Image 1: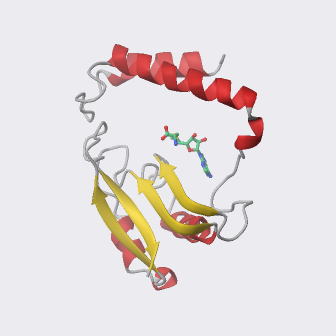
Image 2 (image 1 turned 60 degrees about the horizontal axis):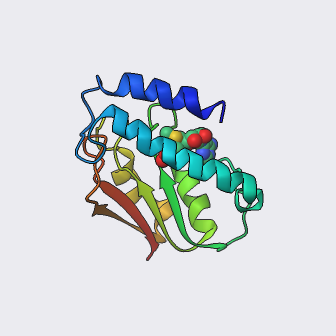
Length: 157
Ligand SMILES: C[S@@+](CC[C@H](N)C(=O)[O-])C[C@H]1O[C@@H](n2cnc3c(N)ncnc32)[C@H](O)[C@@H]1O
């Protein structure tokens, strides 16, 4: 709780002046703060009541067994930080995510924080080490960061 308040506050103060966001869903920074406060309160109370539901991990290696999950979701980590995480990190992370996933993975969004399409997506699609997988960009109806209205669906060929 001590950590989440300053985080909510700093995002709330800074984000209104960043031009690369669309406000259709969140309406304005104050409403966005309210929704995020609700989500963090819900999360923190569930985390307190059921700590066993949460397992910390760090890509590109995960502690889970092969095929442990039906679906794996990644939100605002891969592609978003491509200025700091290189292509090899992305390839290793996708391989590891698909190792622990029985069904499909969904990586959202497909753009960097600068709202630019990630150049790693065509590289993943043509990478011989990832031939066993199919990568499909799927349109979503949610877009906060400009151009964030796609996720990358990863399935087995
Ligand atoms: C922008 S936040 C996104 C948080 C959340 N997924 C969301 O969509 O709101 C990026 C997250 O990546 C996590 N992260 C940093 N390094 C990581 C790694 N090597 N493996 C997995 N997650 C990592 C950070 O802890 C942080 O929570």
